[in-house]
Image (cartoon, rainbow, N blue to C red; front, side, top):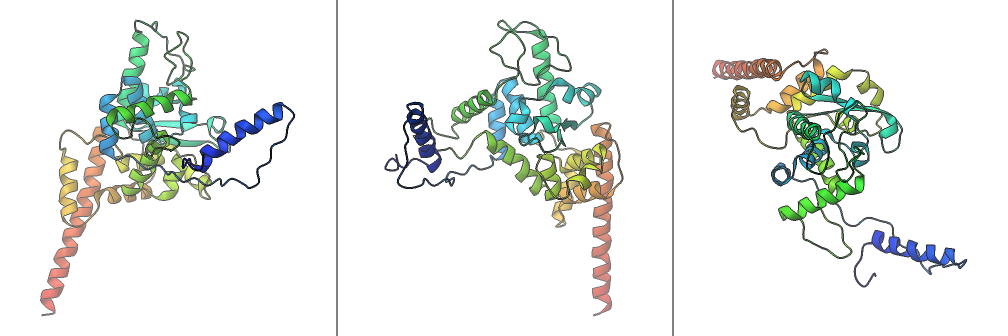
Length: 324
């Protein structure tokens, strides 16, 4: 197996199977040397363009899965355990981004609960997906969605059961192949794009948009030293920070006033996304009711920042003229 250049993990898994066979026969098998356990094939974060391509190729259920992984930062093991009750309040009220409180019981280590959000794209796909389930298909009867209904269901069963992590891995893997992002088969090797890669998209994009690392780690369910400090700030404070990042997968199809203002600010050498994130971190709790209200608030924040930069430029020019 080493001659075939299989990864240490793949070799170790094969050896485990042989050892299990020996144990079942009351025989003992010891290797003359230890196997390395290091990982050698690292995955990467997909680009927004790559994820957008996946969304174009996917059906509505897989669109929902991909957008929730990318915009919510969920582990697949947590995503499959989410129920309608997790999104009901904000989804039915039309509040964006949708807040999702993840209980400790459905996290990887079951250490603590945490909060995350999903943006407009994921909310739209989720709403359409749930509507399709309520209507039913040729194979699946119409479903009555209750608080305990799985958010993403198994389509092989007429009874609404949650999808499995292995099914998600298979669906996303096949989509990567369909898009031509990974080859059809690599014997004994891992791919650089996997399901986990979409969770990496969440981290890398938020970091690039100026969100502080501790907030990103908190929304991914990681244990951090500032966990209690961040959680104590409350849902609406965190919602504001997430909203300010403007995290998305597909680019907006129209240039809004706020987009135009952002371009002007960039021309002055400023980072508009960092400005909005900084403002979200410093302002008191404020409930985001609608996208229009959010855009109005962000327009004001960016306008103030641009005005301050213009005044700074004028003062510097006046100072330079005076000193001539």
